[in-house]
Image 1 (cartoon, rainbow, N blue to C red):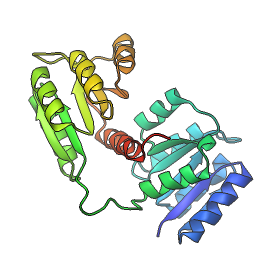
Image 2: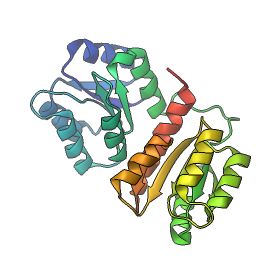
Image 3: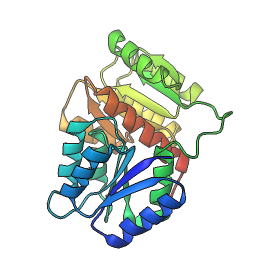
Length: 252
């Protein structure tokens, strides 16, 4: 069982989560504000943190930043009282394990916690997630291939846009990591084809170009995120893991 730290100024949410998680056998420590939560984090070294975005004193984002200075490995799930997709993308990009609205209900929060703790585990016979990496920089392609092959994902690679389209349509990957500037077809052309043909596939753009207009265009055309090179591999892994969990959970 896990040790879980809950930081939330809403006593109802905090107490309810504590009861449910302890009932499942977990150890729970809790705080109602950011400063006390940060002290508990440093003292207790929890396996998972459930962090309210809006806190008195030190805000959730401030607590998150301080925790990441201590460790970049502890999963931190952000709770929010309202839907904020843009903020969700920022938190996930910076290493949050999940971003969940309280409006979805405590059952949803508990479901995400279970997923982050690896419970329930994927069925033994379930196929590993498929990841297609399209990148014409062969050194970067190898780094990304190794990064996602090691945890057991089924990885396919393409060094140009034409090959990426062919592999995408034939293998139907769960996730596509897609460079923008490639020979054959560029990443935006590939994005347009695959997002239309594979609506259940999560497509993330990875590019050496940090042009905001290009990023917005990619998001409008179906990408779920946009990272600049060189990507932080830990952040990238967390984003992919969270996206896969969301895709498996299905529409809510």
